[in-house]
Image (cartoon, rainbow, N blue to C red; front, top):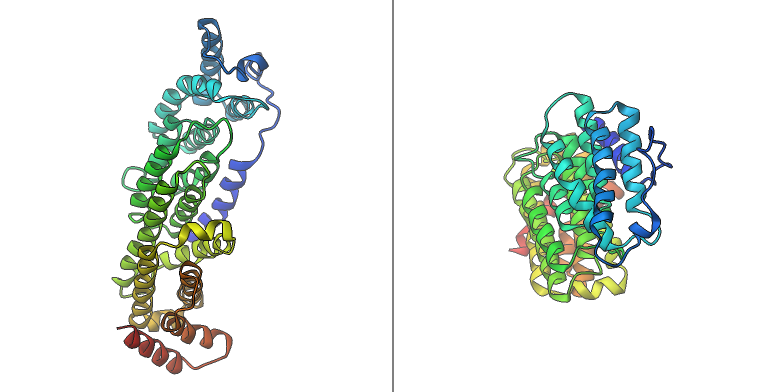
Length: 361
């Protein structure tokens, strides 16, 4: 039931994260946008302009932290509206961020009831559109399951990361910042026990790997982190005596990754032999885990599908990486697929899986 609740929550928070804000209708001057010349400036702000930004930010932060639900949403929309105005510049966003980030960070540290959770999650949505290293730092920190115990808050943060790292012209996120973000995210996701959050973490890592602002060297580094994260998750799955829901995250994330690799413009970034070897070893561990957990997989069709899908899509990814088929890996994926699609018996599938693993050594 908890998983179903989070699945529904994932749809809700991600939709909320990407929705354009409504025209802000704040009370008094709370919803009044900043001057267009200010948000589109390419020169450092004057003292007077910075004071205008500070006054606006302070008013919105007060409504976010202390207002009722209507005031809170109006303040959120007013901030995001200015952050997304046509012609907005990185110069303005840096100034805006310097006034907003400390207050939002403080808001995220507060514990409390459902209203406090709403304040924190709306703060995260604001940070998403500031496109600064300081804002991104808070979002990625919120994906850490050691420090943030609230599954829904980690889910919101992970789901917003692909938007936060978009390579828009006004972004202040360079290759080094993106690479550091991917590294921290890869460390956080392997510690997370919630498969839905892990799925969004993996999708966020792929969004970073595809970012146009990465240098060629950093892209290769992020790709290696990405597949090492898959491998570490597979290690956790293999250490369990029962089927692990984390396989659902791996399977679904790999589906999205496969679609990207079918595009030749991204496949060329993926031809690193070490990455292919990491994937091959990971698939072997998933196959071994399937043998060990076979009775549990038979009893749970959804888990069986996740393991079967991971092996099948993983074999397809490997062929895209290496630009050739690997018959032994294909043989590893085939038995569970045959049981699903062709009606092979459980005994046949298990025997085929064992034989494929033995052939792989």
